[in-house]
Length: 387
Image (cartoon, rainbow, N blue to C red; front, top):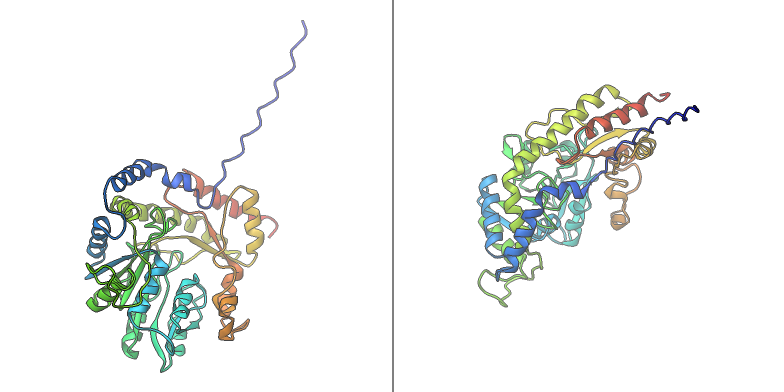
């Protein structure tokens, strides 16, 4: 009898990839809510700035303790409307970080004012308080620090600086609804704060949307007009100001009303993942430097490490099926859009260094079980491969 050939061993299955965003997983649990909200709005006669928007404004005001919440079309729109409501324009200066998303500077420039860049802290990537104070002149009208990644600016110190110098303090707390810093909710330390509901944000919705929070009744009144073509409430086609089309729609508001009750849970899961990264990556310093530890109270938006061999690390992770993103490849002072300000390489060295070293690892509440640990193991392999 002829023996049958041995069956070759089955090849080990390749591990599932770890996408950076993984939108299908992130919206999987919200499918029924999305369908119901679309049906509700479609069957109503409310589409923009109606009852759902008003309810969302009330909920954000309640959650943050703000006297006023003004819904707008996006986080960038929230900054634009806020600066316009404050009357910031030509001849004015606003101090803002050289390392940030473009909105913190572009909204200033589009008002005809001058964004004055200041450098950031290397460990946190947050606007440096001392550098900010050094940048203040007699033309400065406002300070505009931004929350990034897992970090919060030193808002208590910025509030004290703004009070001492008689300046507005506008918090770009776009990623931080639900966080707390220096004993107050993010966005509540100064003249106004803003939040973004862009889908990637911790409080993300189903499109662009944003919110302004303030205790200043006049700022809120003007912001409500500016977001809607300069029209006062209830006076359609009567334009007291030159405003914007910066209105939140009812679909977005309806979905956010369903999601916000879960925000604390979603924040907690993000912090859990950040703790996995912290525990696994801290021993790898200085090859890879994690952000400062201690995530209690923080809004963990993205988990950004620093690595001198950032591009090699990113290629290594990509080869293992792990997605990453670079925040940010070029600092604001070296962007072509701000060439008119006359800055050059070396003007803000910490911002420039972060642009060479920063790398965001996957982090969102719906990551598959074991995925954060797999990312840690892949980073470890990079750090120990002949280094």
